[in-house]
Length: 203
Image 1 (cartoon, one colour):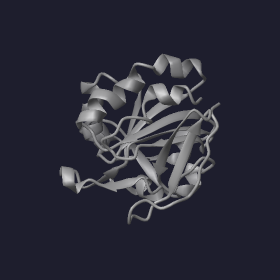
Image 2 (cartoon, one colour):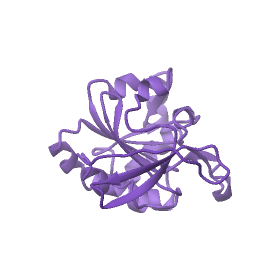
Image 3 (tube, rainbow, N blue to C red):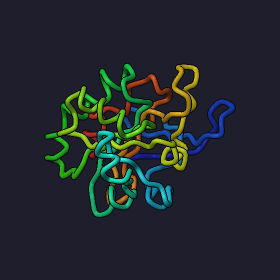
Image 4 (spheres, rainbow, N blue to C red):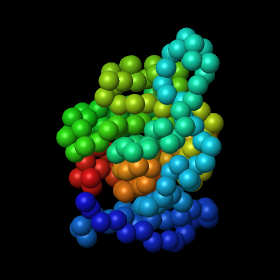
């Protein structure tokens, strides 16, 4: 597994944590978040639940049930990636396809589930997943109020793009809730370190 080195710094005037992630000593990039390698996501975001993508009727019949983080991560090897939002450019054209097209390779590495999470309601995510024909390969979860991303400081104000509070673009390899690998793009419009091919090489 690629080694990961995190160090703290400051980024612009923002209250952020800067992690420099180095792979094999040959290349490096920076991550902006408080979550880091070794973080237990369940403990870092206590009492936070996500909403599995579904139709409105399925939501009504389930009484708008949510899924606790421990049910998503406990005793599992998970690859999870976050993105600014459904139906947006890079997310639709590059980010989701990079995981959808590699799902068999993830399974071959023992990954139990590949998860996409975004600050969207689960109904929009469901329609988007169906449009991308990705529901059979990827589990989609909504973080409708952004609590999950805020708890990890992976939230981002994208009002400039008329999106409002959203998430950064990131990916992680998580084993039994603990982060083993973390990649966060310097800007949500970037697609350099958070794609499926990159994290495949880190597992």
